[in-house]
Length: 137
Image 1 (cartoon, helix red, strand yellow):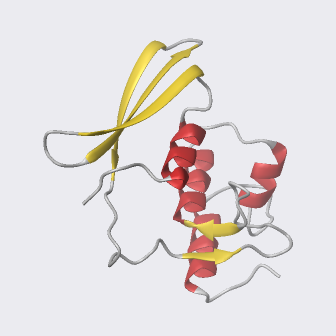
Image 2 (cartoon, rainbow, N blue to C red; image 1 turned 30 degrees about the vertical axis):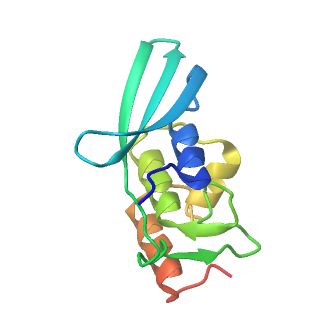
């Protein structure tokens, strides 16, 4: 089996470390058989940082991550990739706990129920969207 980082995985990692300059992302096979991404970058306050992010190896039999196409309003599609997925739920959670500062557009898309707050209700709506049990339109 070949171990390598997919373009989508690399894109997700780049979004996580977007605050760093001179970032370099490489994929390596670790001694325990997992593929890890090594991100090297220089941040404003963190200095030189090394991040090891476990990357799940994929096979042809593994089901894809659940995702649904975003609606015209874009609500729930926080990363603006055209899909509402677990990645968007992760971003909503980070916004809710103030771990990231969203752009105005990201905040609008994360506030699915449009009450002016990004909270656990928006996470619940995102899950319902992915499950096909609710639509923001």
